[in-house]
Length: 314
Image (cartoon, rainbow, N blue to C red; front, side):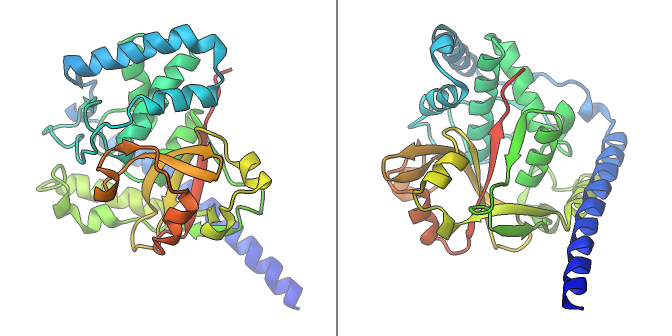
């Protein structure tokens, strides 16, 4: 009888996850349909000359090094170009209507990640113009590459699901161990705290659409590596590669993750290249001296990490 109950519970969990993903797809389709306003039309990118010059210079340099580097090395080489760049929050919230914002002068953890991956993807595709970069950034940042506030992939779960569907990233969730833990997704922080978001104030239709998308993600179950499994072992080194996408899981209500960065291996273990808001880190992009495991042990509300990887073009 016990075995039958276990099997039944397992099948029920699978059915719930499948139902959640089916619901998510349906809600996303409805949201895209209802969001076909002037806001979703192709918008010009917003940037300064220094942004386009820096992006073009990085692409030009990487073009000359392309044959000598694999994808992992390309990602880390580009990521390290931004070390020392100030941490600046809310750089995408400066316009009345959504536009493709490029700001390489100040970044948060998400825009830093998107910037590095977009540049790396261009290099892997042998695309070296600023327009190539803008196209790739748009595809990474927005659902199906369609620019609107609703389609911006505000939560990591949304970002991962869409970019996986687009073939741009792959989720890493095996072997087990080290992927011994499961996170059940419940995200509604934005709709419950809309007053904190400049582009949601006085926008009930946007709030409604965001809430619908949040609810559609409820119940998804995602595997992650708990903090205690992040010790420096041959298994972990074979599982997580340099340049992999690291999303730090949170137990805080209504969120899925609270920080993003890129994996980088040192002699003492796994570290996180990231744009840090911490004063002790200088509020900047850095490659910290402490291991990721040490960082997480000091932050008990972050019980582990999820992992993804930029796909290599065919």
